[in-house]
Length: 209
Image (cartoon, rainbow, N blue to C red; front, side, top):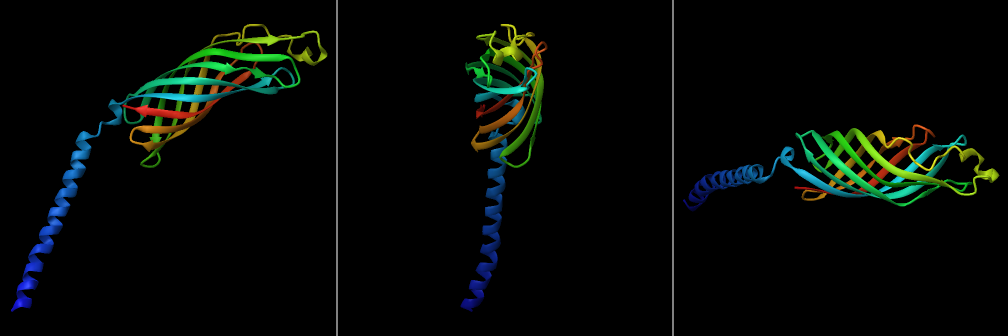
């Protein structure tokens, strides 16, 4: 008789406990969906360390590297599209190997429209296209020296045209709630006079709110 009672109680209590646990899980998921802000309604701010690579410098197609810092402010237009503004300033000029030519990007500002696509629950791929305004200068010391013969056509203003088409491709990883680790690279500008191509490679943090 006692065994029959225990069996009956088990048959009643086990389904009841499972039902309560399932109901609790569903309620928690619904609560999370309600409290979690849709990405389309979020804005973001980021701070990046940027390395600039200047390619095709002069007929010898030399390369030189400079350093800058970039501030990013943007917002999500939808779950897949975003728009952003960037402002940056250079703090280390690029010295062209084998010459006395120095290329400096003093500051720049960019506007981008982009698309991001989630590849996991915590990582996204993104690409963006836009326009940039760049101010910098080129300085050639000892222009009469033979080692500088290839760079005498560089004027003091660099780039010659302050406006350029820019693009970026990158990946971000959510390391904490709404905080992302960012890695990206792309083209900042091409100088219309000297045909120097300047690329940007950045890494840093972005916070969404």
